[in-house]
Length: 120
Image 1: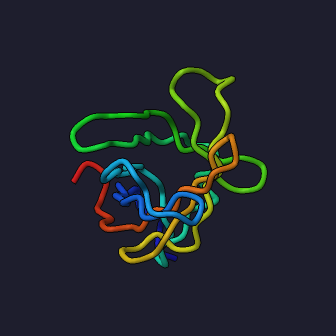
Image 2: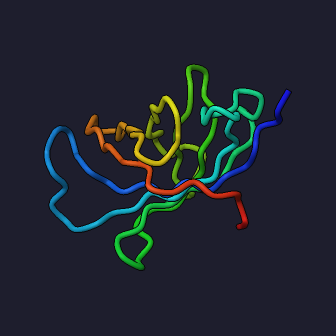
Image 3: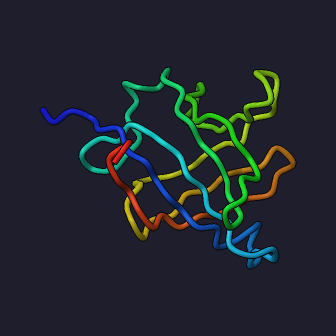
């Protein structure tokens, strides 16, 4: 049985709650363990992985991808009591989409543009 691989995923913000983003190109970069078919690996549910959002070269948010009871979320590096951003994705391959639900309820939809081996 093929083993999950640790990857770095790059995705570009394409919509915010049904509207085009207004403030330029934003990129979500996160590391995750994916199964061979591109799904998040449940076996690594307890392994926190780095995540960040960028606007150009400027980091605007940093935190961790983590497994939660019913899926995955991002939590800010500001602390364990920071609100969660729930992540929804089917397969994480170029061209696929993922959604982050902000604590205040906005949906941020990103399109995956690159998946590479972590560290490579």
